[in-house]
Image (cartoon, rainbow, N blue to C red; front, side):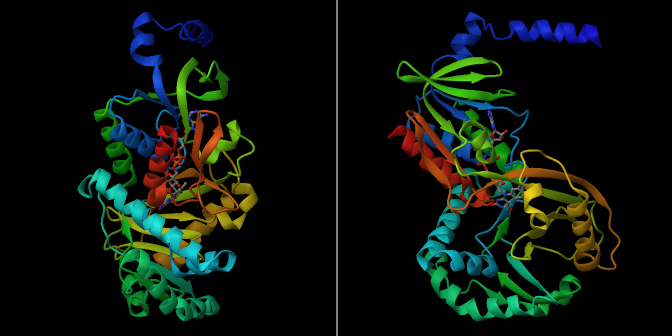
Amino acid sequence: MSRFLLIFDSMTADEHTFSYWEQTAFTDNADVIIIGSGIVGLSAALRLKKQQPNLKVTMLERGFLPSGASTKNAGFACFGTISEQIEYLKRSSEADVLRLVDYKWRGLQRLRENLGDANIDFHQNGGYELFMDNEADRATEALDHLTYFNNLLKQAIGSADIYAVANAKIADFGFKGVSHMMYNPFEGQLHTGKMMRTLLNRIYEKDVLVLNGCCVNAINQENGGVVLETSHGHFKTSEVILATNAFAAQLYPELDVVPGRGQVLVTKPVPGLKLKGTYHFNEGYYYFRNIAGRVLFGGGRNIDFKKEETWDFGHTEEVKAQLVKFLEEMILPGQPYEIDYWWSGIMGFGEDISPIIKEVQPHVFCAVRCNGMGVAMGSLVGEEVANLALS
Ligand SMILES: Cc1cc2nc3c(=O)[nH]c(=O)nc-3n(C[C@H](O)[C@H](O)[C@H](O)COP(=O)(O)OP(=O)(O)OC[C@H]3O[C@@H](n4cnc5c(N)ncnc54)[C@H](O)[C@@H]3O)c2cc1C
């Protein structure tokens, strides 16, 4: 063991001395360096290269794979349940609600345009919101707002047939303890892993270099450019895009981005599974869907917001127990199933529900805080920050 450590140490000491070949082909002279290879960073790279094909773009990603939310999420291509719209309307204006839905809807269209539905297993199977037996008030509130939101969101979606009552389907799905259900035919689902692989392929085709296992520890201004201190030495560049989402405050503590962990499970294939689509309940704090005959189920951050406000991946017994209880009693009552495995991902939240896209210091532009909606809005967030950096 100690011999292994010695060898490893001597390698680490030397690995920052890049060869002439490494410097000229890999580490030097990037016009733009993007920190973080999640959906936002990758979408920014794609935009930069579309606008200026000769630009040298390098991405620095500290994970072996992208290691935040983009490869860990639920793959819902959604723009919000009625309850989410109601909650947002309570703390903002009608125009803001419409703007956010419009942004997510256009973001999803852009994602599909950029990557192609077949490549990402996109299916518009529709989305459902469930109300439990003890949520009669919430269900009534949603019903009262149904026509209002259909008329308002028509301006974004292009149809007023968005939200509809779907109580008759509760029994078909086999749910227990659910008294009301709403359906939205415009919502879809995709394969998150394929989405990220396709995005990576798109930027490889455009000669963007992605260096994994490289953590940026500090960002300094030097001679009109920027120098990044990383776990693999210094990188100089002209412009930087910070796409580290939940982790943004580790480099810029003044940014209002707090982490929020999401815990997820996936079952083994369930014989005769009836679910098809995306499902939300409890104001969107719980979500589940079908994937390859399995149930993917996540949420429960609201059980203890403070505990889930963490940069650490992992699980808590409280959240796991609650997810298992809902799965067993409500989603798959009386059906045999087995949980295959669990994972977690880290989202970036803030007081304001819109992302932060701005210059944080000369030549450094950030695009962070997707508030748990980055599959929907990430393509546009990346595009916007790329435009800002180019301008
Ligand atoms: C469990 C879960 C379920 C979700 N479900 C959905 C959903 O169904 N629909 C939806 O729209 N959204 C969903 N989201 C949210 C969505 O996944 C995120 O909003 C989106 O992925 C954010 O993308 P991003 O590129 O901004 O950040 P990330 O994907 O987090 O990427 C940031 C990257 O920066 C890297 N990084 C951080 N610090 C450094 C550093 N110092 N140096 C180098 N690299 C660094 C990280 O390793 C990471 O790869 C979910 C999220 C989670 C966790």
